[in-house]
Length: 465
Image 1 (cartoon, one colour):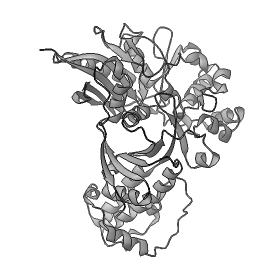
Image 2 (cartoon, one colour; image 1 turned 180 degrees about the vertical axis):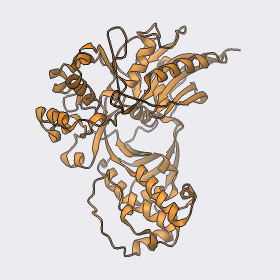
Image 3 (cartoon, rainbow, N blue to C red; image 1 turned 90 degrees about the vertical axis):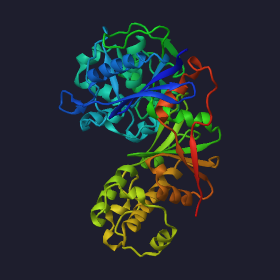
Image 4 (tube, rainbow, N blue to C red; image 1 turned 135 degrees about the vertical axis):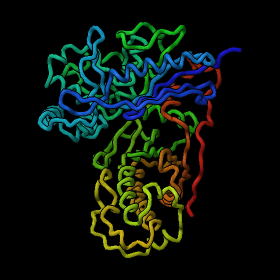
C-alpha cells in the first residue's frame, strides 16, 4: 500500500507553533502544536526563544517523517511578520529575535523621520504607519546606530518565514509579502526598496527577492540546528501569515471582496484596492499589506477584539455571568430597536481614532436591564467603528464582505454588519488554518497532482433583518 502524498507546513505564531500535514485534498491528516516560552533580550524585554524554536522545528519534522503512512514531499512556512533573524558569515545568529512590541527610542525615531522626509510623507510612500519596532526595517536602523559592530557582521537579515526556509535549504532569499507588510522598507509607488535602505547600507543585508511560488531542494543548511535531509524533499521560501491567509480567498473568489479578519485586531483587507494611501487614511490607521504575488492590499485596523475582551469582562462582573457567557447571546431585533430609541447621555468623542476603545467603555452599564441588552449595545458601538474602518477601503466593485475569526462566529456582530452594509452580501467565512493552507497553496504545482480547490472556504450568509 502506497503512502499518501502530503505537504508539511510550519505555521509559526507569536504564541502557538504548529506543524500540519495536508493531503492533496487539503485535509489536515496530522498536526503537532507547541507553546514555547519566551526569553529575554539583552535589555530584559521578552523575545522569541530562537534556540527552542529551532529545536522544535527539527524534532517535530523528524516525528512527522516517522509516520510511515505519509510521504512528505514538500515543506513550506507561514510566520508572523515584523521579525528579523540576523545571520553572520558562518551561519551564526548574531542577535535575539527582537519582539516587534519592543519599545523604540524616541530620539532615534525622530532622527530617522527627520532625515527621510518626515513621518507623514515617509508613511505615505511606504504604506507604513509609524509603529516603532513593528516597522521591522527600523530594527535594522537601530542596530546600525546602536550596535554598528554587530551590523557590520550581518550577512543576511531574514524575516522569520524566510529564516525558516533557509534552515532547510541553505539558500537565503527575501520575499515580497514579508517586505511589504508595514516594514518601512518598500516604496509602494515605485515598487522597489525605499531610498533609505540604500543610503544606510541596509540593502547589503538583504538577499535577492524571490517569488513565494518557488521551491528549492532541502540540502545541508548553514547551521547545525536544522532539520535532517530527506530524499526529494523540496521547500518553499515562506510567507507572511497575513498574505498566506488571503490566498485561499483569492483562489476561491475571483470577484472583488473585502475580508475582515477578526481576532485581537479586526483587520479589513481589500486586495482589489491598489490606490495609494491618502493622508486621511493614514490618520485613520490604514496601511498596506502585500499579497504573495506582490499586489498591494489596502487595509484598515480596528482594536475591536481587545476592546471586546475588556468590556465583556466588565459586563460579566456587573451581571454576575461567566466571561464566556456572551457566546450564548443570540441576535435580538427588539433589543436593537429599543437601544436605538434610548437617549443615552453621550460624553465621549465620536471622532476618536480607530485604534482606541469603542464608546462603550464610557457608558454607564447600570442603565441596562440584562447582560443581553448591554452586550447588544457593546457590539453596536463596535459596529459604529467597524463601519467607518471598512468603508475606508470600499470601492464600487465590492459586492461581498467575508468575516473570519472570532466575530465571524458571533451572530450579534454578523447581523449588525449585514445591517450596516445592506447593499453588499455579507458572509461569515470558515476555513480551518487559513494561513497554513495558504502556504501550501502557494507552492501547489510543486507537490500536488490535483487542481487547486475552489470550495475550501465555507460561507454562511447574513442578510439585514
